[in-house]
Every structure is written in structure tokens, then in C-alpha cells.
Length: 301
Image (tube, rainbow, N blue to C red; front, side, top):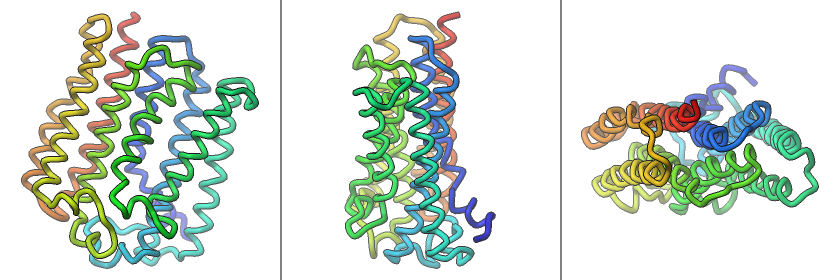
């Protein structure tokens, strides 16, 4: 197995999106409680492991289902470029699963001091669900990503579970339902990343996969994209309005021009030309989460 090909298949450019939610959850927890930096680090490492597992599983699933061909609009990775074999990828996925399990157990143990009480058991069950969700997006006989359910799962795992889950692991409690507003914000942005990816790949996906973008058609999928971005912003603004007012809480507003550029780009571009809009939205979401969290921590000083 070539290391360069394996790294390519890990799709490291997607990591800022998966870490955006946990970063926001950790920072919001730090603003409300005293948290352990070691727990925070293990939360991030576990999230990165899950994202890499998801990326590897998605590539294998797409190849096995015949979705990724030489006509693919997006970049070519290790398996669909021929640099890796299916056997190589299956081995890499097994290693990724093992890393996720070890990292998740370490995270839970360091945070709660045990894995035999109700709270850590719930965290571990959620982790097991995350592993299954990461693998079953395109793998298996009836992958949910091929039935137009990817948006729902991305919203739940990249948004709700990512932000609220990391908050809970770091703080050991969720004192208010309001935490689900910033979680929803990251969820909407994460679905938007998936949606613009699906808009770009509509022509090649149509033969084997049903996505929300295919069901809507290009124009309505772009309207959907705009709505997702707006809902994300409204969710975070609502969260801030429900807290004690402080200008620092609105630090994330600095990222607004990036989202405007993204939406304009989505409406003007088609097919492969949409590809630059993906990393733009990923980095915008990461900056949004980082500034949003830092703003609440800065309020303490």
C-alpha cells in the first residue's frame, strides 16, 4: 500500500469541517465550566479518526457500487485512481476502526474516570453509532447515502452530536437546551457542504445514487443551499440573543463575507467548477465555529 495514496484517500481537507463542531462544543463548555485540556484533545483526536474512517468507507462504497468512475467531477483518490486496491482499502478501514475504538475509549475514560457508569456508557453507545454511521453512508447492501438520507445523518452527527456531544463529554452535563442552537448551526452548514458536493456530482451520481440534489434538480438544490446557510446563521444568532449580551459573542459575524462569496459562487458555477466552493465553505464553517467559541470564552475575561 502506498502511503501517499492512503493519505490522499483520507481526504485531509475535510477535517476542518468535522473538527468545527467539536471545537465549538469544547469552547462553549470551557466558557461555562472548567474543562480538562486532555479531554478536549482526545475529543478532537476521536473526531478526526471518525472522519477519516468515513472518508475511507465512502470511497470504498462508491467504487464497489460503481458510482465513482473516470467521469467523476471531483478529485480522484487512492482507490479510484488505481493507486490502491480494494484489499488495501479494506485493511486501511480496519485500522481506522481500531483507532476510533481506542481513541473513543481513552476519551471516555479520561473524561469520566470510568466506562461503567450510565453517562460514559451512553457516550460509548453514541460512539458506536457514529462508527456505524461513518461506514454505512455508502457501504453495505442498502447504504443510507444512496437513499437521499445523507443530509439527515450529516445534520445529526456533524451538528447535533458533534457540538452537543463534545460539550457533554467535556462538561459532563448539558444544563440547557440552548446548546442545540449552535449545534444546529454547524449541522446546517455541514449539510450545505454535502449538498454542494452533490450538486457538483449530479451527472455522475444519477446512475447509481439518489441524493437530495438529484431529487430537487439543480436550481432548487441551489435554493436549498441558500436556505441551509441562512438557517445556520439564524440558529447561531438566536443562541447569542438568548445569552447575556456582549459584543464578543458576535465575533463569528466576521465570517459573513465568506458565506456571501460562497452563495454567489454556487449560483454562478456549474458541475466541476463548483469544486472550489467546497473548501471555501469548509474553512468558513471552521472559522465560524472557532470565532463563535472564542467569543464566548473571551467574554469571561
